[in-house]
Image (cartoon, rainbow, N blue to C red; front, side, top):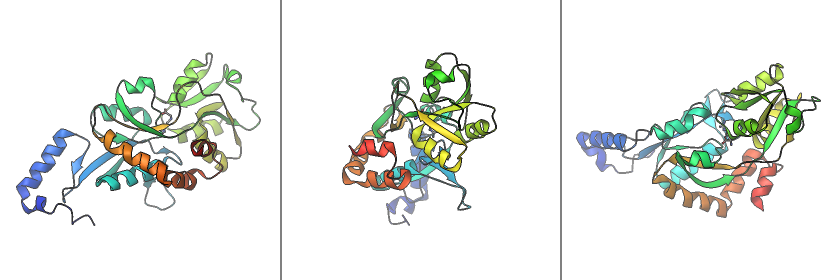
Length: 268
Ligand code: ARG
């Protein structure tokens, strides 16, 4: 497939080994493929359809989604190979800090707090918070959540938003899929999550409903990099090109559909 590229590197076994060693030192996350193409490691939390999820329908357990296709497009455009690692959301920033990954795409919001520890690309998609609850529960506003058991993803901006609403019985959990199970089983009363992701879960769970709440903090998704990584300046122009060429709209329609409120926003 990519055998053509930089054949000269494999002409000497020694130089190939040195290249791998050097690349491994420069950035623990990445490596160099046998043909000399640099491989970038993307870390994600694949519990977030349609941004990223494990496709169990194909039997391959492949990680697919909106973020994955953006990552594939950008890395291919820049001549990198892509490797995807699936870890808990709360471990993504530590993975960048330890250079175990070259970048993170996980529908991650560029917050002020995170900016202390990682660098972010431009924002490529918007979303807002919504309360997911069982149909007819009446949990439609932030005020109605007082005293209720509310699930949020550990380390997410939704956890922060929920902490800002006082008097909740907060249940931070690792995986979104786990939270939906807890809600359906009645072990929690509601979940605060993003509308873009809630929509998909509602479609397959008619016993649940969602009610948007006003955004308080930052919103939207951006790509995260280790602080000072040169990749940000390589990725941003490709991201902008995807937006201006209509490629991004194409992917938004493919993964979120025309109805998506966030898609409307971005098209403005
Ligand atoms: N946008 C929110 C945040 O940055 C939630 C992202 C959750 N992503 C995921 N892959 N589970 O905190």
